[in-house]
Amino acid sequence: MEKRRWLVFVVFTWMFVFSAGRELKIKHKDHGPIYNHTLATILVRYASTVYLSDLTELFTWTCSRCDGLIKDFEMIELVVDIQHCLQAFVGVAQDPNAIIIAFRGTQEHSIQNWVEDLFWKQLDLDYPGMPDAMVHHGFFNAYHNTTIRPGILNAIARAKEFYGDIRIIVTGHSMGGAMASFCALDLRVNQKERNVQVMTFGQPRIGNAAFASYFSELVPNTIRVTNEHDMVPHLPPYYTYFPQKTYHHFPREVWLYNVGVESLVYEVEKICDDSGEDPTCSRSVSGNSISDHLVYFGVELMAKTWRRCRIVMGPGVVEYSRTDLGGNFVLSRDLATPVLKLNALSEAGAKPL
Ligand SMILES: *[C@@H]1O[C@H](CO)[C@@H](O)[C@H](O)[C@H]1NC(C)=O
Ligand SMILES: *[C@@H]1O[C@H](CO)[C@@H](O)[C@H](O)[C@H]1NC(C)=O
Image (cartoon, rainbow, N blue to C red):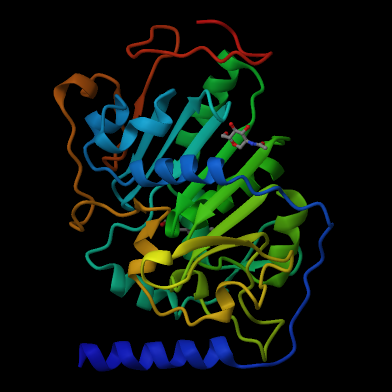
């Protein structure tokens, strides 16, 4: 029965993905972001570490996923919304010299069930202050209507007080990519941040074409990395026959795919057009793979266990936590009395520690 449901779902996805029809062009200016491969391989590590449920390792940046490429990083705040099973962190890095914000993807029992649900998400919420722009309330509320947003805004304010006006990079995988997008737009529109950059991995669609237009105008420095046959970027579906009613990705996609056979396989990074829905990128293949969703650039993007919202916290970090009535909490570092090894940023505007 379960199998049959899954099959119906896959068949439907194929039908909509391959249905031909009139494409809707979104408005945009032609000054797209420049894709930086090195930056992508660094940011994907942040999108991976935020999945960790051992908060002591994560907060003190001693996890095995934390080493290597991203050693010059200091955590400022780790926000955990227990009620809605969400996790995000804010920190500062030396390379790229920026405030880094990372959002975790879903932590459901089964990624398959979560992906299946994505298929049915409706455009049911008017994005505030943007005529005709519609989004799904679930994605919107995960960022806007939980303890995540106040935690993040507070951490950014503290980071800027200490380091000056440095650039902000927002990242996340899957559902975390959807939240990263809403966060970046919020920072640009409501917090008047000028220098906001976004890179997400395997994110679903989050709004309609009008929303995608606003997004690309307001946060032009955005890259949406997709991988091979990853199913999630194909969802919720793009209905070619109903261009006014359908979900629509914002630009700019960078599609990763392999060419060659056997030992001669190499990965291509295709920089897609600025429509958001380039038919020659991930849309040229069937989005039928979950496994392509879980590994990007060879980095695992999932929790070690799929048990719902399991967290582990040692006594060493409990003193840095604040808890609200719902049991949600933030682990927050007082920047004036550092507990960890710090790396002062060298760029103008950064204050020495
Ligand atoms: C690409 O990103 C890396 C990592 O932040 C940085 O060191 C490098 O200078 C960037 N390259 C360009 C051309 O901007
Ligand atoms: C925010 O969440 C509350 C409680 O879950 C809900 O009643 C309210 O409608 C939500 N706000 C929006 C804008 O959806």
